[in-house]
Length: 199
Image (cartoon, rainbow, N blue to C red; front, top):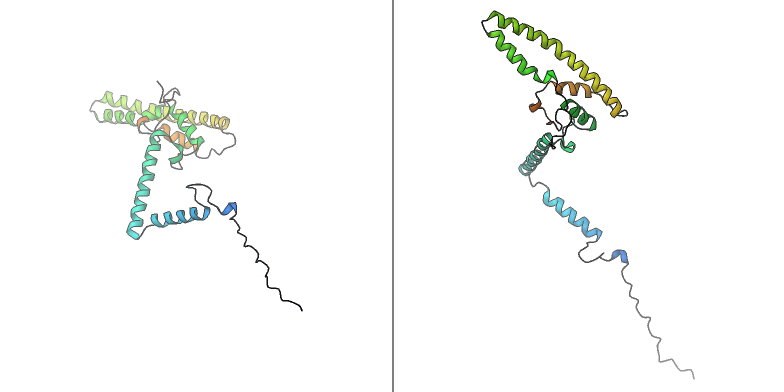
């Protein structure tokens, strides 16, 4: 009477989903973010010190490299590697301001050496000259430093009205008392304001 169906309905075809574009490799030789993170972690593990001796060696190498950069910056005036005492546009301006002029204070050390030699000579007239030279030094040098500090304050207010000038004037005064060749960082301008790298 009623026959059982012998045919079965076909099973639904399996759908193949392609990976989302974000899961694919972004191009040949371009790692996925996960792979990039793994590579960074691997490099970190490789560079990490294996023991205390290795850590000390790496610290010494790092300190040596920093000192080398600082020494080079002292010669070139590179602000990136200068000590905090010498870093910044204000300190750079103060150094150039002082180095662009000659002051009696920078000759103070050799001047005192000459006075000392004169004072040791057994000649009364020479000792009298040394005494007068001493008086000239203790009068002229402080007056020159006072005028220098006033001019420097004025220039700083004009050039850097919105920045702190704390310690800048004393920094310039101390630099002006040093022999020019011994100043650090080394002068980048000649007396008169001309840059050192130009004739």
